[in-house]
Amino acid sequence: MHMIQVVFLTVLVFFVIVSIHEWGHYFFAKRAGILVREFAIGFGPKLISVKRGETRYTLRLIPAGGFVRMAGEDPEIIDVQPGQTIAVRLKDNLVTRLYLDRLDERSSVVRGEIVSIDLENKLSVTLDIEGENESFSVHPTALMISRGKETQIAPLDRQFGSKTVAQRALAIFAGPMMNFVLAFVLFAAYIQMAGIPVESPDKLLVGQISENMPASKVDLKEGDVIDTVNGVKIGIDFDKMIEIIGKSPNIPVTMEIIRDGIAKQVVITPEPNEEGVGKVGISAALPTRSATFTETFTGSAKLMKNMTVSIFEGFKMLIFGQFKLDDLGGPVRTAEVTSQIAKQGIAQLTSWTALLSLYLGIFNLLPIPALDGSRLIFLGIEAIRRRPIDPNRESMVHFVGFALIMLLMLVVTYNDILRLVRGE
Image 1 (cartoon, helix red, strand yellow):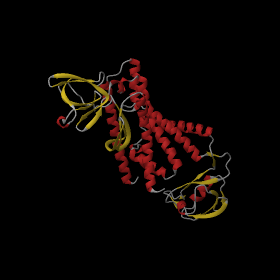
Image 2: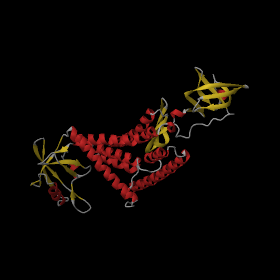
Image 3: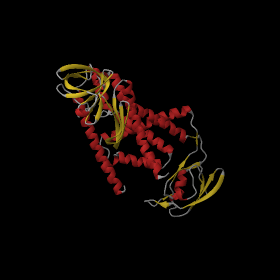
Image 4: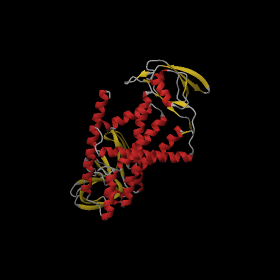
């Protein structure tokens, strides 16, 4: 596989699993009537920014996740107070634009000093225009313009906090849920591509061929039947083949293979590894058959279960300190592993993408501040108390959690880069 393809597939994997997660938040937030201000992939400075309807879609510099910014959760609404001079633009007797600066440059506007303003409930503004008060109704999607930036107002019924606990919980849980759905679909696709091992196999096939190894330099192809090695019948005894090759470092080995019903011989010279054992760079595979719909469904569910258990085993080791810093990986390590797996073929990359999607869904449900799991806990407490927790306190908890996660990400990424520089 060409390097350009590998890079493209690596970027695509990240884009797909993050986008599907954020799309879950976005879709159910919009369905609940919440104003979604931004749909972002990545963090940090904007690389690409496009506005469609009420939402701005952005691609940001740091590929460490993404976010959906909902009205009522963001700090960027500009505070407008009585006594401030503004200009408004009307359409059909409704205010559609509120200008907060550069008022002398605005044309076709009404200018005055604010007497009262309510952009959440009554959607009205009263201005003192040359000594006379005049009231205007404000359009629910009116824009506030300040310093060249447009910000849509958010009436109370369009804000996240105004929705029921169930609606907010669904908008939050939908992100991980979509990762679980994606993982299930991708595991199913992997099973369809890889097939199901046949019962009572009678032959061994050439599986993956490693790049820059002896097997990649001779006429071997995935799917070739391995008949004999140095005249010894192999059958399905992979260990026997490993034993013969392992005892022949730098000594030519004759493999007889069968391709499309035709037998042919391939001479290959194993290279010694660090222990002096001969290696040729192939893995063996057993014959497979196409999976039925039922086998695909149950097989995908089984893979989901097994991978979930493995993920929680990893969390257990992390919690009880049974790990080293090198055991952790950030975006750099993930991209490196993804590129390596991409070279193995679409089937293996599909399985790896499913695992990453499953991991992202589970990780986001952990009760760690700033993650979806923590936000769901706050909503659960609100449901029990029948009143919300102080938003300022909750925001502070999430802010601290996010800062700590970003700090850990920086440390892990720095370690990943050092490891690459050292060639480990």
